[in-house]
Image 1 (cartoon, helix red, strand yellow):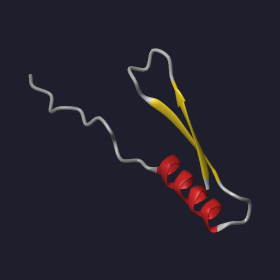
Image 2 (cartoon, helix red, strand yellow):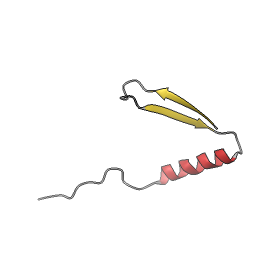
Image 3 (cartoon, one colour):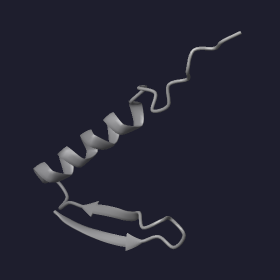
Image 4 (cartoon, one colour):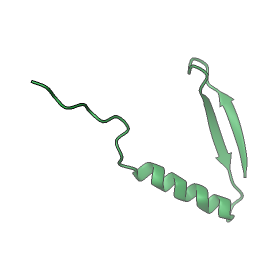
Amino acid sequence: MTYNVFDITGAGGLPLVGFTAEPQSPSEQALRLLAIVAATDSTPTDTPSAATE
């Protein structure tokens, strides 16, 4: 598996990291599974606070 790291201008030092795996390899299968989990994760990242009236 290989990866590239790109600096994003104006992102406060956060990089963009891209991974590449050989076709038909266990690494490719693992990346595909990770992509599916990430795309279907319904866990909220920002939970709203309880409303007060």
